[in-house]
Length: 354
Image (cartoon, rainbow, N blue to C red; front, side, top):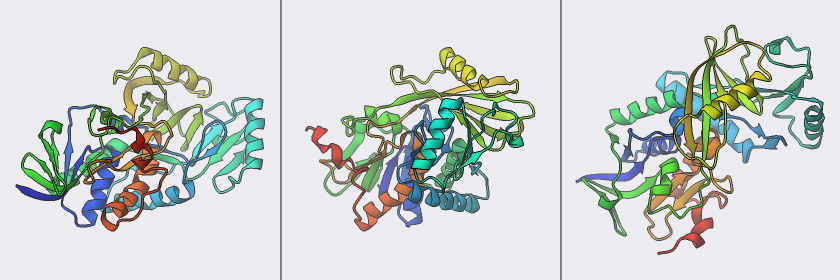
């Protein structure tokens, strides 16, 4: 029987980063990943943005998370000699005078000077979108090519003989006080990083997820040369070579993995309101985000089994939160450091029943 320190279930953003951090700490890790299942990580837009929403909300822990993620992704790119992290920053053209007044008032009230500056309406950099009133430019924003990054990490795990493409069978999982036994493997601990599929895991199906389906479009936009993400409720990510990604929808009442015509029409109509160039839709993708009711991650011990853990619930901000919290999870597992109470699943232990 092969001896391990950790079994990690799932190779999305959460599972990949946690496995990587543990392996860097010289731990023996096995990643089990069902490659037949669709995942939100594989279709994610991968946007990171410190200032979000109609009220210019500062992303939770932004001052800690954003410097960390920049360092982490840059280091990962250097290690694997590739490019998947794009700090393009973000531009929000004002949709109307009411929104303009609202945003300008908020920039005066909040201390957002480290992240936001005002762009005037005559700026030539944004002639390919409706920009009659100017807008807000957000720094420290951008996007990550998540599928490319996960493929690189999967190859890394495979080369280390730390990866198997298989669906875990919970019926074959033997949990005792001192070990985890699964088929031919014995581990000290097991960590579930299953995204939306945790709702089907009998060990963690009591946690209050609030999953949301999201859809995006791929498009050819001839001569598009805006380097920033443009966001006016719906967004345009420049992929290069006149290719863009448009998004995104949030659907809570129809959780399937199939692209829908209604979402295609909605995204197209919203983008057409501010994009002045013609475009051609070339693809459509759908995923289910593992979002949570309180918009905080689910990290920590199972209430009964102290060697069973979860690292999940990163939701729409996965590329922002995962690097930082993977390190915090490592500190919790290996150095007995206390997890942040806002992320620790202990906050929901009262929902668990034997």
